[in-house]
Amino acid sequence: MFKRWVIMRINLKKAKEEHDQYLDLDLSIDLESIEGVHSLKIKEPIRATGKIFFTREGMFLSLTGEARIENSCSRCLKKFEETLQLKLNYEIVSLEEAKEMDEEEDILVVDHDVIDLEEIIIEELIMKAPMKPLCKEDCKGICGSCGQNLEEGSCNCTPREEAKETIDPRLAKLKGLLEED
Ligand SMILES: [Zn+2]
Ligand SMILES: [Zn+2]
Image 1 (cartoon, rainbow, N blue to C red):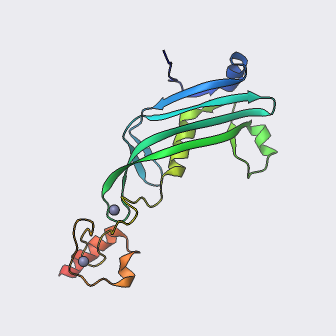
Image 2: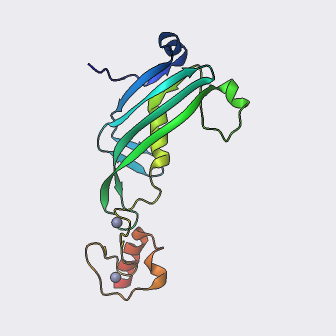
Image 3: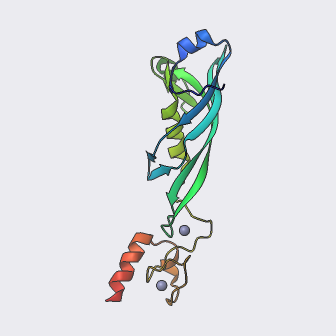
C-alpha cells in the first residue's frame, strides 16, 4: 500500500540520516480555502508528489501537483472552477547559508532544519492564482452603463469606449443603479 504523508513538517536532518539520496513525497492537503490576494475555495484535496534530494551540493526540493479551485470572474463575477498546476524546484538552505547567497536564486530558507511542505504549497498556489481570474478568455463582462451581465444577454446601451474594459464590475452595477433614477 502506498502511504500518504500526513505530517507536512519534515525534519531534514533526520530525513537525511534515514534516507540515503532522496525522500519520496506524496502529499494530500485537505483545505477549504486559501486566503491570498483574494480568497480561493478549494474544491478537492490538493495533490502533490515529488522528492527531497540529499546531494553533495546540497538539498533540493522538487514537487509537482495540482489544485482544483473555485474562483469568481473579474469581469462578470460568475463563479467558475479551474485547475492550478503546481511545479516547484528549490534549493533548500539554512538561514545562515541564505545570508551569503544571491537573492535572485530559487532558494527555500528553512529554520532549524524543519521544512513545512503545506506552507510551501499554499504560498505557491497564492502566487499562481490569477490576479484577474476570467471565466473564459473573452468574457464580455458586465455592461458599464446598466450592469447587465453581457455573457447572459445583451443590453440596449450604446457601447461607450471608456466604460467597456476598465470599469470595475461592482462599480458598474452601482453606476447602473444610480442612472436608473
Ligand atoms: Zn466572466
Ligand atoms: Zn447596458
